[in-house]
Image (cartoon, rainbow, N blue to C red; front, side, top):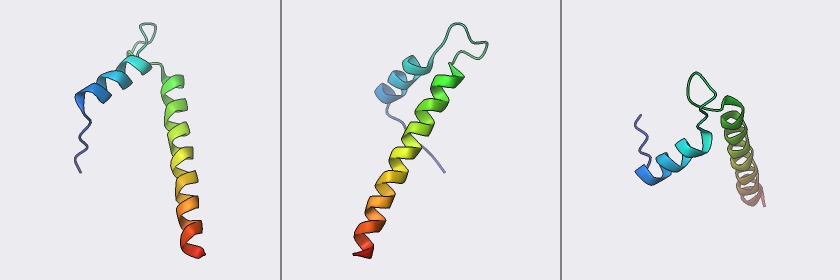
Length: 55
């Protein structure tokens, strides 16, 4: 599998999650919050789509 992320999106995300205080260069808490938020959004969209199919 190959995931292509446009350069501008990649750099925006990198700036958003970066942390100079972290040994790995990212804020792990912020990163996980963003991931969880997006997963919740996807779950809600999927539920709406599945609800449309059922009716």
